[in-house]
Image 1 (tube, rainbow, N blue to C red):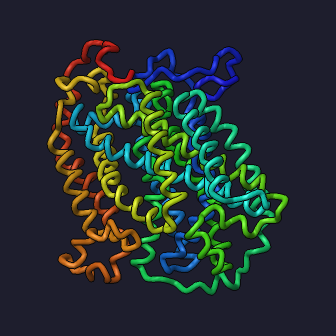
Image 2: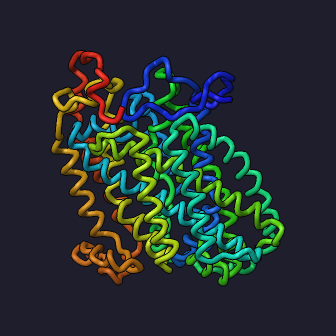
Length: 499
């Protein structure tokens, strides 16, 4: 038996988490920064990381360029998560409550809605991939991989994810520890079994791409990894003691989240670069395509490692999406918010699994489109955190008339402006519903929607930089005013919706 810190207690009973948006009291804050390794590693050890090798090469770049883009994009984006996680131990509340200090209590609802959309989207993608992977494995075994199999697989995977999200923090910490061990071991076995499919002569022959294509791959890696988690990065560190090392929080979050994707990316690049057939197949079925090079006897263990890895990420997403929905203004208990998100997740998974055949195009479109406003929010959040010299006044995070205000115009204007500029600098031609983007590429002399900069996705980087630099330059006075006041009166639980 483990407690909420991941350490043995022998007495703590597993139960539905009662905490929602409320502040975690000192008596319940346990563990060390090292315990953050487990949820972050378990959420990112997914076999899907292998497929990112194919995704990166799809930008028209060489192995070495893709490797550099992956290393920089993965480590830098998860480093952003590490910095945001520091706010958790300084404020004891979920990520999308802590950003009220920048946006105001009700002004923060806008980024909370965006955060909710992103996490629901991610949990939907991961659940759909787990369902398709299961069906592919059973089809190869001759046990049927048609509609009936997919329906059963979706029910099982969806149930695992929803139960984890509804139960909350304690179950997630225990589940992620198991997923880390089992998935880590089986992934190593997978790599050993398919290593003979690597042909360095073919990999090294992949031609180099342009600087613009390299930047596009780099941004894709950022949005596919750390920028998909920044809006949830403090949801687990909020349980740590207040005196926990800030450097430890940053280091263990970054290390735990990055180490598996980095190793998987290298091997995925080698596999995709060795076979154009496999590279093409991954675009349609990112997980299932990886079974085509496996011996039959390892298909069941592969299904286990694939499903567990994807479930590990989806569980963290559904937990954080429920919290984001509460932060957006929904007044229900946390577990009901997670349950509602689970219903939406299953509906979206049905669409991906049964109604669409262009997964990769829609996936990239989803990542880059929501990646722009999330990058803008991340820039505002990080600059606001950097400007603060004191911990958050936790009670005022829930009071529109408190020091953080109701609606703060500056961060909202910065976020909206950065998003508008960012969407004007990205394109998503594979997703027809996003053809309106890229409207600034022509006026800014970047070649238009068909030019060399069209697929560099500069909008994500621009939004991140504008949010950060704008807040750093213009927000200092506001932060100093907030920190000058005396501590507020203690918080009444009735002031916390969803507590």
